[in-house]
Image 1 (spheres, rainbow, N blue to C red):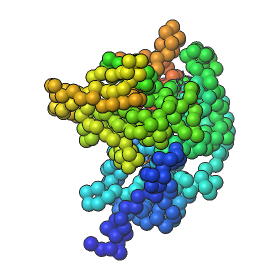
Image 2: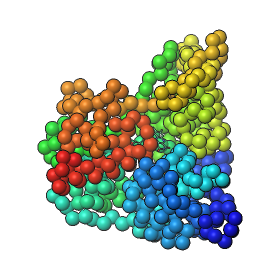
Image 3: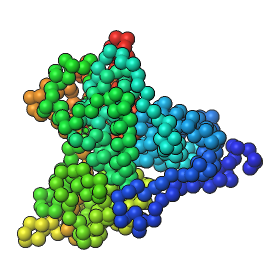
Image 4: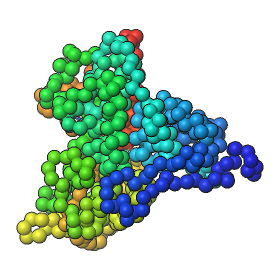
Length: 470
Ligand SMILES: Cc1cc2nc3c(=O)[nH]c(=O)nc-3n(C[C@H](O)[C@H](O)[C@H](O)COP(=O)(O)OP(=O)(O)OC[C@H]3O[C@@H](n4cnc5c(N)ncnc54)[C@H](O)[C@@H]3O)c2cc1C
Ligand code: SF4
């Protein structure tokens, strides 16, 4: 192997993890746990890319980010050019780089996995984009108005990305958002220790400077009808997400001390508190979280930061079949969370005054893979056991929130779980009305919402600028 050949830098340079605060320090606050590479480390890490002929990282990135090209520029110290290239395919690169489960996407496909550790794509995407912000290189250039107006419903990553694409093409874009703080789950779900709210606010501010109008506190479907929108705008993008919680269907689900994950995360987000109601009292409590996704892990880590005596995750499958990000699982373990796999709740027990005091579980075993490829859990007979709990958080996922009965939004066709049905251009059953992100996919990822939004924006542009059907 030739160590002087840049093709073999990976064999000389180990992958460097992002600087991470020690667990004992980070559980005392809600600030981000990672900081950035320095310039020399970024260059060295980028040089580990071998620029392979068929870059599978690009195929595995839902945005087809031009990863090898911006890695090559980064390796040469041309950080601003690298960031510009990164922004050409992504509207929220500084956010995706923080929250994408890279091990399942770009980095999981890196060819170096066969020999050593993958190129640190997420960390480098974060570095170049933060570098660009720090050097005032992300400027709100105003495009000339092209005469067309578009309404975007929801200001999550889908809504923000769609608005950003269109405003840069000269559209007059108005975002309608039911909450008073824009950002969707980026601010009202994903905790600040993964993504500080100031990072989202900086992006929102940039969009506002580019000319996007934010109408906050407007609940479309209730306060504004579809016909109102279609009268005032030539196209509509529905980025309303999926925030209706799936219920826990066992006896005791209504007891005091049983709380839905999203309310808990909104109320217990430290100084970044944005939710309605007071923070849930957690100090000294034994917190049990039901579920195995990102939301469950965020609840565990939020509980630890809120002073829980213990934070235990009960998940009915095993680690290999758990949907949550491995990076966040490792962080949760470091911070003191406990995972109990192959455990499924059958009943919540209570004190005489109706307060939850335990989760009765049954031991599970895994059978054959189902249609989705995941192994189906089965209960082991006579295997019940009790996990003591003072607070139980339900993190079983979400469905889209239906529009009110009788609303003209009911013209927009949905599937059996309430997801908005879209075609290959993200257009719904109503011509000129598009949708994407969690509202059409069900609970997914930030990067998927951005991808759908870009696809919808391109179709809206084709429809309005050249009169194509989409
Ligand atoms: C706790 C948690 C942690 C997560 N962690 C990660 C992670 O680490 N990495 C990752 O990639 N993904 C993560 N996700 C998933 C990710 O946040 C979502 O996939 C993504 O935010 C979906 O974007 P969206 O734009 O479709 O919807 P949302 O982000 O849900 O935004 C929808 C917006 O529409 C608004 N809205 C809804 N109805 C109306 C209406 N009628 N009128 C006006 N406004 C309306 C809502 O208030 C909201 O602001 C997490 C999700 C949760 C809940
Ligand atoms: S957007 Fe996500 S998948 Fe794509 S390069 Fe960035 S971190 Fe990787």
